[in-house]
Amino acid sequence: MAPEREPAANRGTEDSRWLTVFLFLAAALASTILLKVGPVQYLEILYFVELAILLVLFSQNGYKFRWARPYQKIAVWYLVFCSIAFILSISALRYDFYFPPALGFLNYPVIITISRIAELLASLSIMLYLASIFRHDRSKVAFTMRVYFWVGVVSAIYAIVTFPINLATKIDLGTYGVEHRMRGFYNEGGPYGLYLISAFLVGYALYKQGWIKRGRLRIGFIIMSIAFLGSQSKAAICAVIIFLLINGLLARSFAKRTALIASIFLFLTAVYQVIDVGAALRLYQRGSQAYEWLSHRHAKDPNFIYGRVAGAFIVPKMVEQHPLVGVGWGNYGLLRNAPEYRGAAVFAEIDDDPGLGIAGMSAELGLPLDIYLMICLLLPFIYLRKWKAPAYLTNLALLQPLVHLFGAQLNVTYPWIVTAFALGLGYSYKEVARSQDLALPVPRQIES
Image (tube, rainbow, N blue to C red; front, side, top):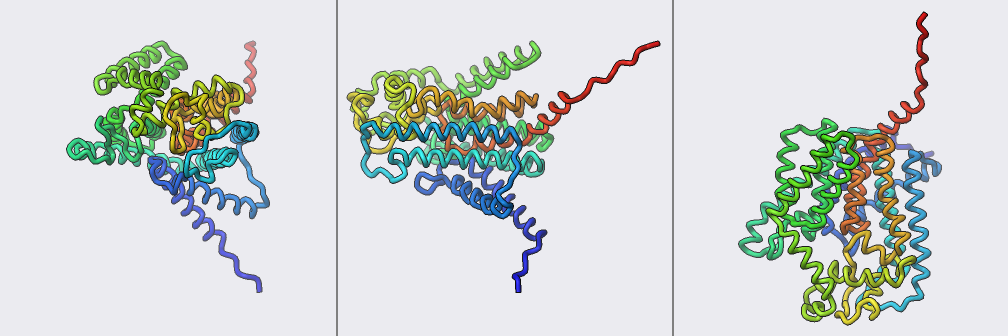
């Protein structure tokens, strides 16, 4: 006797429940990179579980699926990028590597490139999968965006509430360090400031869609503004300025351009009242220029031995020697101890990352492939501009390239989710633009 099949309605209900849980976790876990198993974030694990489920459903459907053509083109661009990056990583085996002690298996040459490609393709697949869901189901995108926005507000409340604790006891929670920087659920104030920009943009998109009331939006914005200034994020400040400049250049009316220019000056005035940006930038400049000497003087301080200060010194040397092909995606930490890059600086005992985003990746990818990657990240923004989507949606798509430009790594998950919001909501404008292009002109009547 053949086994009884589960009723289709029940399966559909269970699938819908799991999808709701997945959307909630994806939006909530995007607020932190601290929850991880080894180097793998919880959200990345969730991505791979969801992709495994999708592969099973894909096989049950006879290996057939339908993707919107723009989504297919975006996927093809990234596949070309991954193929070239893999070939370059193999060619990089000719270099002499300097392996730090206790190097993990996934961090060896070529293997680390494959792991980076797997992370990228997982994020890309989930982004396009979510965009496809949001394109057809506005209730799902409204639910996910609300979760994303309010978790951002909760993270800001956590940072503000723990500020007096850090001030009085020096305990590092949502606020940390001697400068008492706010970081919410993140590890540092810099990336937290960039994350808060995404929460602002998602909140404004919710308001424009009519999915949140003005009073609640205002309260959320006030809370997050306090945390944004408290993060003292130089990268976030630069990103906001670029946002305003691009919107000013794309604005059609003179009044809007003038208003955006005034907004830049007001924003900078508010920032300089709270943060001494000039002193911070001078500190970075002095640190990179005197890195070799400082690394010996502060040999036990990881802020000088690793990360952005070291990257600002080492990355230009790598780019100078390998401008076209780079040293291989993920190989920075395996080659940064080479004398031709490190100079007389202290030997790094652990695997290192420059923390410079797309700029830092130029040392690993080479300048041509690095520029190609930036174009890939800009594709959703380009499509939304082509579809004549409103500015609040194009800004959602513009977030990802700016976040990665100002230091975030490609495996940071929240920019991909925000881009999915933009692609899902923006596709309806593609249909409108297409119908307008295909509309036949109405013949004029000849008066007798």
